[in-house]
Image (cartoon, rainbow, N blue to C red; front, side, top):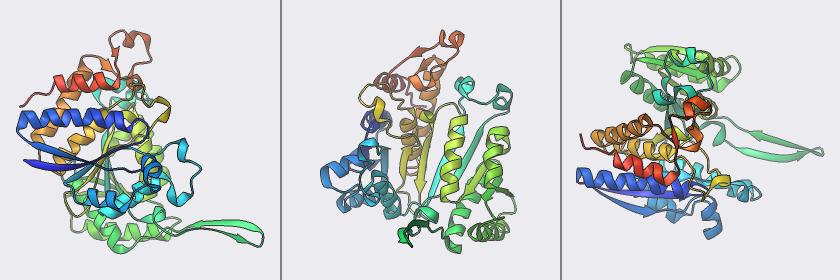
Length: 365
């Protein structure tokens, strides 16, 4: 099978971690008889430096014309002083909107080899952490009107949160369909005791639930959900929520699994052309030092194979290789045990060695 993948290396550690993911994809192509063609795309700070724009139209078109997009990370302190509409993150928002990827799906799963790395009590971790947050991605307050003006000598800023019934329904369906494929439990998270947008959200979700009688729907206020994720994460299977709430909750959920460097994500819309990226930032302080953890990016590539290319065996192959490398005690710096006795059974490795070890353990089933 031939697939064209748009590759956004981005800023900071982005080029390093993407390089390892591409090495893994090349080995998968060799093992399974595929051809992956890579089209380079500039986005983020590097695009600002090169083109004066965080996402030039030509680069967006390359992404839209690909079979899927693999992204490293964008941003960094270097571009903090540029105008708000030109920040690297604006390129990412425009990419999501331009591709029409309205559903961000982020797993929060703890690898058993890393259970001690979770900041939660072992008794909580032992109950299991394995859920998915389905986040609406191209609506809400991030895409509403943003305005700062001077009113009677005082600066006043506003950010408008808008959701339509149709926008809620389409992400709600993703939540229900995802729950159907798992344990048939869906938790809808909002702030309906305060926000009109959340009251509409709750109304639409309950109407949709009539079409999914096999899925158990529950409602939870976002502040309570934030507490429950650290108190009893095993209660969750699928969480569906709006853009800003999902942004915050998914970052919280990633940290209880032990390391943000291990978590992949997918962003999908009406087509199979998706956007796949690790959830961590560009970490410019360690860029070029060969210490970044590439596993989140490699697992994002596996998600791309699974959800955009229907290559289930190939995705399983990558995930199994990651698990085997962890079984052998290899750890990047961010997942190296802090406990001295546990660290004796592990060996710290760098970014490129981590990629090489995963490649060595790729086995066609």
